[in-house]
Image (cartoon, rainbow, N blue to C red):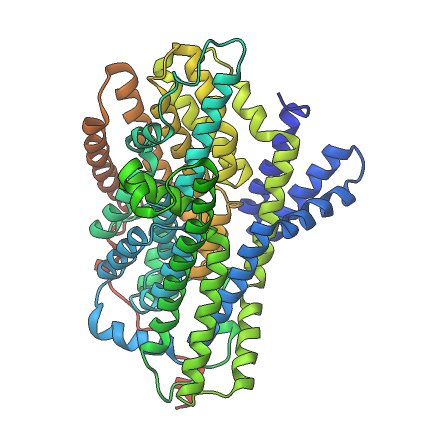
Length: 564
């Protein structure tokens, strides 16, 4: 149990409430961190506050993500400056003619880029932002589509997430074996990979969140604050509300693009370089690390031999899981910047001095996002040091019927992720505890895939509803949305999915309905709820919930247009 008990909840909850009420995430996060410093030290807490902030910057993984984010800002600035956005807009005007096609393209791209959630948000957000603006899709809607495919897909695809999840399951099993009060031998526990594969159908929130995006896009129906955002964008062309504070706003923060020769290659070539170098770097670093580990253990060190002995999927998971994705993202973003500069110089679009100035403008473009990221990591460190996750996870105890255990684990993981702003930290804290509680309740390993899937589901839901989540920050950044607007609009859809997940878990717990049955039921319920909630909200407001079927006002003319 945490030494600080319920007080450990104050910093993250204070930051979250302030962020939602004031719509000022930087100030809110800092106040939350400072309150943690006061609680931890019993004094003014200033020194401890900046220790957490500097520690978050000094962490190697965090530093790599910051460099990646800054370089990506430079890549975006270069693409904009070289007229890549103009070329895409011209291309989209002739080929992508509807919001539905735009949303569907974004959704499919998000599913295909399963290897890392950070890279997913960066690539899909930057690729589709100009096109979605052309189709008058609100930035809130684009950010929702990007955010609700990135992390959910990464939890079930061949990614860095899977390797981390496997390690947490292994840690949970080790805690059972090492517990002197339990008679569990190492040979008794099921395989870690077997447990993970079995948990995928019970990672129900991730699966249904992906489906929910498809339902929203294909039906063109919205409700809650997303309906307000979509009506504003469709009718007026304002993709953000008037007083929004986007974490990145290319049009306002950068110089006018060079439009004498807009080419699609100035947009797609840098992005292809980003994807290719990131994937190659992740696989290469993974292969190097995996090979060293295999040699140390006396296991096969060639990919072919490992695949023959362990199976293709297991070998690939081991190699990709061992990869340094953060370093790979840095290399990929540098390749993106270098490719854009080379194209600009080769076609005489700018000189070297102009390219360097544009790179620096890109750094400036990301300063707000970088600041929020550092503070979000810092509040996570506060929660970790004060024992927030341990307190929430253990306060429920083991006084539960097995039928309700998955739902309790789901909500515990969701609350921990919501207050810590990190699904990885949540999985690290809750997974071993959930495995131990499940074994104590049943004396068997039957519920292990279920509770592991519930942890993953809750962690992603908490991430999707928390304004201090790093993935929410990045999704807002790369789509050019206001962070709090993104959370306020997405929470309606995330909560709808969570409601269906609870029903699926109840069906499994009390009626032994297997995933092959409850997952289709869940999809059917999602479709029904989207239609019912959108109709009810539309009737309440007296509007059509299918916004893109309504009338449009002509887009506002720019100052340049009026002069011409």
